Amino acid sequence: MLKSLYSGISGMKGFQTKLDVIGNNVANVNTIGFKKGRVMFQDIISQNIAGATAPTGQLGGINPKQIGLGSKIGSIDTIHTPGSPMTTYVGTDLAIDGDAFFVITPEDPALNGKSFLTKAGNFTRDANGDLVNSNGFFASGVKEDATGVQQKVKINITKDEVNNKKFTSYSIDANGYINVVDEDGKSGKLAMDATGKYYLNDSSTANQNENISLTTAVVPNPGGLKKAGNTMFEETGNSGIADIGRVENNNGGQFIAGVLEMSNVDLTEEFTEMIVAQRGFQANARTITTSDSILEEVVNLKR
Image (tube, rainbow, N blue to C red; front, side, top):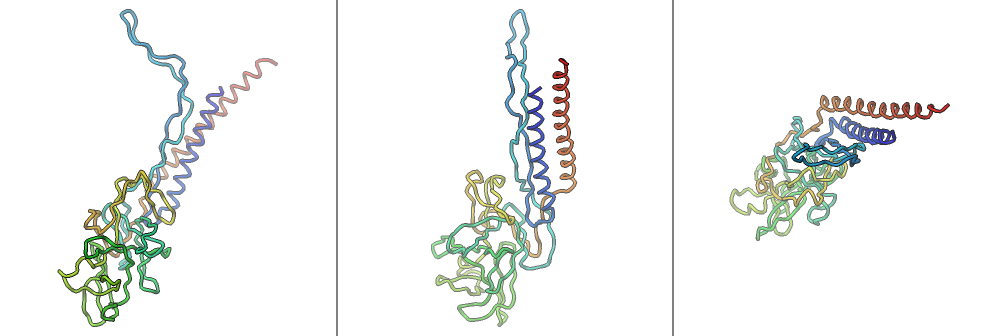
């Protein structure tokens, strides 16, 4: 009887965890860039009552006799399927049609400090003209120096610091480059020279390495990323080394401006799994009450 009691307890704990994950999924059904979770179960060790025997010339083989001792959580996976696109027509709202993540940093990207990955592309310009997310983290930009080495930089859309001309409009293209127009009507790409000054590069051939584009990251195993809160992820030993750079170089997909990637939670699926978890919890609770009733009968054998 005690085996069934503890098996029931393990099952109830497992389904409680499943309900916790489902509840978090449902709560984030409208969270931009959210990736849903999934619980997978495994059985615990089994008690061997009798081992297996091989067939002989006189007798056939006999299978092993084992009693399972319950279940446990095998894994809690993060599912990185794409979410539905939501059109906003806001120029700084971005989605990536592909496997790449945005790279954001809590400090100036040029300092090469800690960075995070996200699929939430709801960016805005702050008072200084820097492109930031809703938490004030900087959207990382990337350029190359004269030797081709990548450099992370802030994306500041304010003015041409070389010619002292303010930018009057801007847009972000499919490869993450920032197209700007200055007060004289001249158009080109946002760039940064060797001295760290932003300028408008109107050439289609010269100094292309200085053009700034949004930094993206592609990881070998997205499921190995660790959730860091605020719809952000950080790398782990099992996510693999991220390929960070321009989206056209790491084959991460393409940018779509005016669109946001929504949560990949499917309410129909979640409610179905919720019913399964609820009934599983009830069934395991019934296992405990039934075992208790049988133990009561055993106790009452002697009156």
